[in-house]
Length: 471
Image (tube, rainbow, N blue to C red; front, side, top):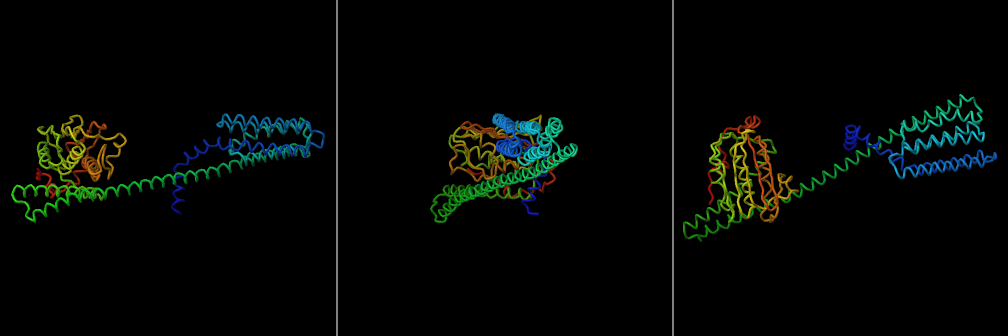
């Protein structure tokens, strides 16, 4: 089966009840759309048949009177539906029964043949089936007056040429067939409605997927541009300072030391970008491994202090540490935890031009968790951007200049590492007032983490984080 048709089948079967309810809900509108044309056609046919059959018998006045009554019913029907379309089905059923009564009364008063009256009733009943989606129940209700009125009309003056019982049986058969026909057409219309709904849903889904694909393409383009910029800048610095060293322009040992520190700082910046991409690739491939160890908060804070590049801290911004002296130990992956906190501190320092950035650690005895909070007095984040800041390749914030934006990996790493370690992350922010990011981790990681724990020879990157001091 074609994939698109298979999808239509899946949509229609999985949501069949919902689609059927929608179809029934739209039925009054469909009936109301056809009322004017339907009864106009019937009135014209009714008049032509009546004048042709009975006008030559000297009953033109009676025929004209009932013709006017039919017009009044059609006009009243139209006026009611123009004010209340929701009542179209009930009003149409009532109008159909009134038309049957008028038709039988007209035929009885002029002494018409019963078979001619049955033909007129049949025309009315068939027109209802074809024109209006009343369904089997609605069609049966619309035929009540014809079924009950025919025996009464026989007593009032209809002239049968067949035994009355045969005429009644023929009328009953015609009504039964019309009900079956209405049910068949209703089911057919429902199938078409389901198909149209599936096509509409598929079109909307395709439009959504196309929009997501375009957004992903734009994000990837922005990411590549950002990575190129983030790598090109430190590479240019490294190459420039290396050339100066090779040319012997650094006369004193202090100048050479300062140049080497700058080279190392920018090399470390490139290493962080590459390491972030490697970690995300491992996560996507399901190859994430953990090195679980007992961590002292004081040691953790000391390691972070030593590893933060001094270039991250702008003049007029104070970096504060609170909770470092707390005698508390937790079991987790030290490298991933440090990477989470470093990313948060980097973001906070990047978007804070004056004031302070504070890293706080506290123990939540109720939840049995350690809460790390990074607070800044920076630019803040717009409310509409808050739900999307953890998306991959999402960059920048309120008032962020393009050259200050990162690659868009940091917060994605924060979210994935934190949740993988059994914790959670929350963000609170107000534009121009600052941002608070809270990371909560359990004292002991869940079994899903410990089961993937690897032996703990420290990786090169982990060793670099704990030992590198850039000043």
